[in-house]
Length: 518
Image 1 (cartoon, rainbow, N blue to C red):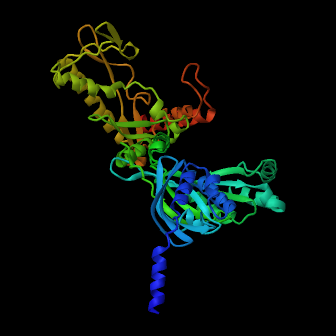
Image 2 (image 1 turned 180 degrees about the vertical axis):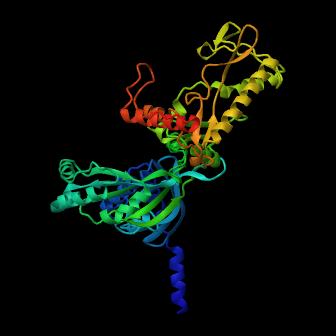
C-alpha cells in the first residue's frame, strides 16, 4: 500500500497540468461584448441554442453595449468554471452589473462553453430570457398656498363599445349602454351606437368619466359583452368646485413638471412572454409637488361672492406685496362666455383710486384731507389722459363739499324713514347737485325714483340677501339673457317683462304715495 501511494504521488507530480479554459472564455466574452453573437456561439457545445439565447438577451435588454470581466478560473481534467462579471449598458445611460459563472468542458483537447442559461445570469432558467421594463414614478400633486391638495394622481375611465366582441349581443348591449350613460350624454341612441360600432375598426369611444361617475355605472356595464372600460392615468381635482376653469388650465401648464424620473426593471420572461422573476429594480424618482398661489379660503369666499348674482360676475384677488394671485372666481353666467376672469379686459375704474391716493400720500403730494379736482382731462408729460366720457367735476372746495354732504344726509334720512314707515327699505340712492351764479346749492335731475334708487320690500329682506327690488332689475335680468352687445337699437321687450316691471313700479307707488295706477 505504501508503494502504491508513492507511485500515485509520483505520477501526479510528473503529469503536466492541462491547459485551462480561460483563453476560450475570454474569447467568448470578447465576441459577446462586441455583439458578435454568432462568433460567441461557435465557442459553445450547442451553438444554435447559444446563438438564439444570446440574441434574445441583447434584444430583450435593448442593450447598447456589454463589458465582460473574468474574475477567477477553476478547472480539473476536462471540466472547469469561469467566474465572470457582466456590466450591461442599457438605454438612457442605465447600467446593470452582476456576477455569475460560466461552465466549461473539454472535448478532444478543446475547451468549449458548456451552454446553459446561467451563462447569461445565475437566475436565468431554461427557455427564459431578459426583458427591460420601464416603471412610471408616482406623479406629484399640486397644492394651494396653505398646503391642501388641489390636483392629485388618479384615473379617468374611457367607456367604449367593441362590436366584434359584442357579437350577436351588440344591439342588446347598445340599448343597455345608452340607458346607463344617458345622464352623461343624452344624445346616445342604441340603433346609432350599434351602427357606428359596427363600422368602426376596434372600439368606438363613447365617454370618459371621472372616478365617482365610473363607480356609479361600472357595475351595470362591466359584464356587458363588447363594453370596454379603460382606466387612463390623470391628474384629478380634489374638489370639483374649487376654481374649476383655472385648475384645468393649471393642469395643462404644469403637466410636464409633475412627472419624475421613471424607474426600470430587468425581468425574466418565459417562452409565453410572462414575467417570471425580477433580476434588478431601480425605483423612479418622483417630482416635487407643485405649489400654486391660490388660497383655498380666499378662493371659496370669492366664489360665494360671485354666485350671489345671476349676472356675469368675476373676481381676481391679488396680494399687492408679492403680486401673487390668491383667487380667480366667476359665476355660471360668466362661465357660458369662457374664462372671462382671466381674459376679459376691463378698466379698473374707481377701484384704482386707492392706488393713486396711496401713491400721492406716499410721495407727500397730498394728505388724507387734501381736496383734489376731477378734471375731464389731465396732461401727464406729453400725454393727455381723458376721464371716462370726458367726465369733469372740476374742484369742489371744502365749504361746498360740506354743504353737499349735509344736504345728501338730510335727504337720505328723510326718505329712508318715510319709506320704512310704509314697509320699504331704501337700500341705496344718489343725488346730483349744482350751483347757480350766486353759489346757491340745488338738487339737479330727479331723485328718489326707481331709476336712481333701490327699494326693497322690508318683509322679504334678510342679511346677506338681495330681495326683489322695486326698480327695473327685471328688465336688466331679461337683457342679460340675450345675445346683445348693448348698442342701439335695443331689443324689444316681451309683454310679460313689461307687465312684471310695471307691477313692481305700481306696487311701490301705492305703498309710498298711496297712488294707484290700476
